[in-house]
Amino acid sequence: MRRWEELRPHFDLRGVKILTVSTDTPDQLTKGRPKHRLGAIMLSDRELEVTDRFGLRNKGIHSGPPPPIAAKALPVPTSLLADGNGKVLWVDQSENYQRRSDPDFVLAALREHLQ
Image (cartoon, rainbow, N blue to C red; front, side, top):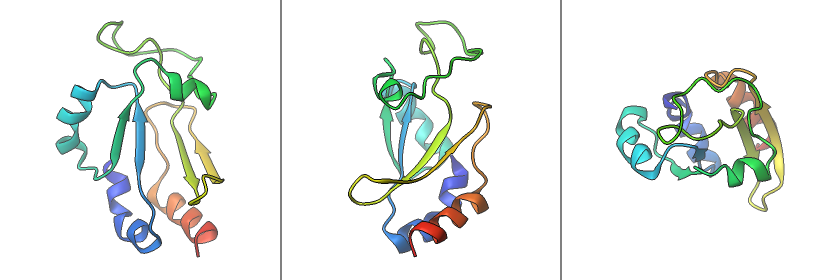
């Protein structure tokens, strides 16, 4: 998550807001905020309602601890860039739930879609 903060000046310049959706509990999100140093809106999707609406439930191996500690599944790591009307302009997904987009890759998408 800290990688997103590296791009904060570019996001701010374009009026981009960061919203995260995860299976962490609200308490876990609150406790993890200082660790990740992410100035974003962080939402808990414990029951995978948002994840499933976007078809992003990871059907592969779930390597986390079993419920009730962990969620029953994990989402596929996905980055979306949407405009002010909610139109999705760019999507990036990773097959490995522990990997995220490189900041330079995201910056290129910002430049391409939000100049």
